[in-house]
Structure formats: structure tokens, C-alpha cells
Image (tube, rainbow, N blue to C red):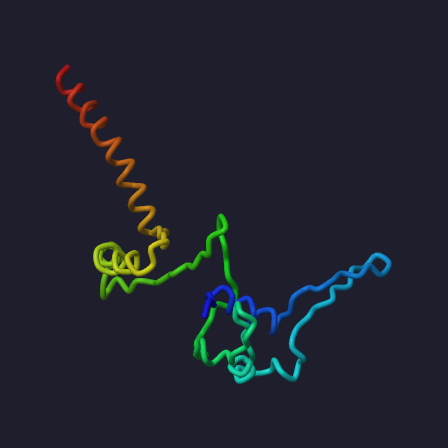
Length: 157
């Protein structure tokens, strides 16, 4: 068919949100002229399924023949850091049931490697207690040998 996912997404966005065709200057204001489907044809998900998708050769086919509409939850906002999409996953640990260290070890050993294989560009980093713990241990690796050498030096004298 010669249709990519980005082509499909672009056509749906243009049909429902619109594409700026022109800007007209009126005094100090810019008026954007948007080209999109009439409001009556962009009110429901059924309208998405019925919209026509143009292929590279110019033929048009119904959306439902190349994609499936599924209901689901989406993010209310998309945050980005350094041009990458960011999602924060947080949890409050019930210390009567488990501790954060064991949970993070399990995530690191069992769950995150599978996610990394499934989504190759995925990056993650721990924050909160886990980050504080790793920072404490990294400084401990430096200061502990120094303290031991100082104690040895004092005892040797």
C-alpha cells in the first residue's frame, strides 16, 4: 500500500485538528486559515473509522481497512525533556509488606530488561529513595577507604 504509520497519523491529524493553509494579517492580528473536515464529520470515533485515507497512488480507502480504533486511556499531557517523551512512574511502598530496595532490585533484574528489549530506545533512572541510597553508597565507596587509612595511620603512630 505504501502507507506508513506517520502518514496515517498525519492524515488523521489534518482531518480532525486541521492544517494551516494560510495566515492573513488583519491589523495587528494574524488570522490562521485552517483546512479540516466539517465539524459534523469530526465529532466521534465513528467519524475516524469512516474517514478516507489517501494512498501514495492517489486512491482513497476507509480508515478501518488499514487501522483499528481501540478505546483506552491516554496521557492528559505529554512532557518532554531534551526532546524526548518523559513519563514518571511513582509508588509509595508499604514497609510492612516490602522494602523499596528489594522492589527496585526486582525491577532492575526482572522487569526492566524485558521492557528494554521490547522498546529499544527506552531509558530509565531511579529517583527518590533509590537515588539517595545509590549516592550515599557511591560516596561511601570513596570515604570508607580514606577513613580506614586514617584509622590505620593513627593506630600505627
